[in-house]
Length: 436
Image (cartoon, rainbow, N blue to C red; front, side):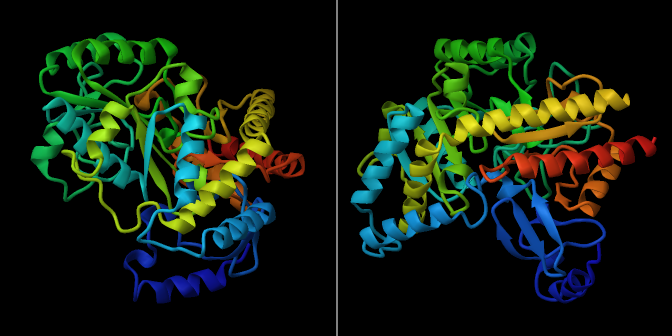
């Protein structure tokens, strides 16, 4: 494929935008590719190349690009809502909140804009509710780019410390070192080591924040025993249990990881899929925590664009289709079939590769055994992955170049699209094998 126009635009973009992009995760080697349009499961770059999109806005586009049914519902809700934009709530705001809670099983919800904004609100809530200041996160996890949670996220293995006592490694330069040091890092899926660290810091610890299924390192599931342990020890020690459902909500099950694990968190943060690409996130959970953010109570909950009416309309339209089209069930079936077919291809070729997936999210690891934590996931073969992704791109499949990133399907990734993907993946596996 030729990328002449993208190469030329990149040279120009660097003059106006740092790195030529608005988010570092969009960078590619040797230069970014700029897109011009998208439809269903496909994106088209400015050189006219077509790709099956396996990033799907980091999982936001659960209904696919430019879904006509979604567009029609969106227009309907906008007209019904009087074309309100921002600065007000409406009857639709209340209707959407009611539906959101019915699906998730939570008691209260308040809408905001991004996952990082959601976690900022949650930090205020848990500190006010407990009178404690320390936060615990999982090793390798990404829960937003704020100082207190952007700790040990994708950290180099040379810096992570011992297995039983991971280091608090800043995720980027510029973080407040005192805040970083005050964040406790727990070893995911390790009950004994986690319990020792939690009990050691029990008088300081306000909350434990985790993705129960760590999709930001590909796809690594917590064991049911580990989730049950966290719920139990949080109850015992008065620690707030927070689920990061930004990627798992409305995907792994209609009620997210709370439904999948049959465990009720105290607070959850949501985003991505429930507004099908529109800007929206949510803080949701038990009333006793959420209600301290109400007007006149102790914790502020502010934001000009919170509950933006375009996003509320998008959420209403998305929830309509999620419920009427059995989207979550279909995505899980498609994901299971894709993983099964891919793993059979790899096994048939004798290539140490496996695909892990759930709810439309998936990743390929070049190793013999599915990882159970960040350190194991980080042992995937980066050279094989690089050749695999380059082959996919050359054959019209758009993937992340980061071997610990995640990929996503939409309802528009039907049997025909998946068949096309598997043909390209078959070739890509051979390219990966030649790399070694």
